[in-house]
Length: 123
Image (cartoon, rainbow, N blue to C red; front, side, top):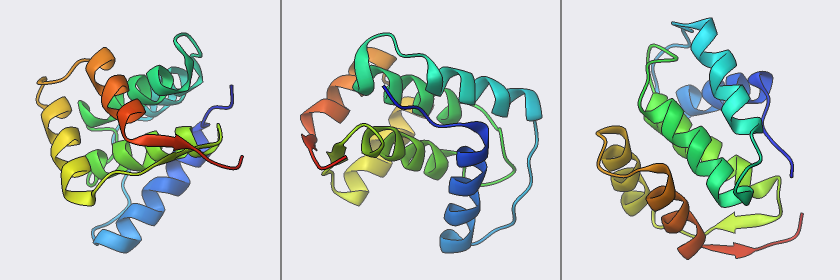
């Protein structure tokens, strides 16, 4: 299984900030390292790994802005590098990330949502 690195998470955050506005500011390098570590944990397959990575980012302030948007980008990226496309409506996806960030979804539920809205694509 392929995973995201710290550098890829930083790149995704730059892209999200460029699209949504705001400024790039890393608040906690240790949280960024832990996010990358969680993205690399392979247990449970790609949906579980993507959920683990996204949930960790969504529930913490790794960066000054756009942590939840980064969480969604990271989950999408985790799936893409593993040949899986996420086919979810943007508003629905944002609502799911908000719910997960607030503690309303655990890793298993988020992984199930990702799998239900995904399809195998070309790697």
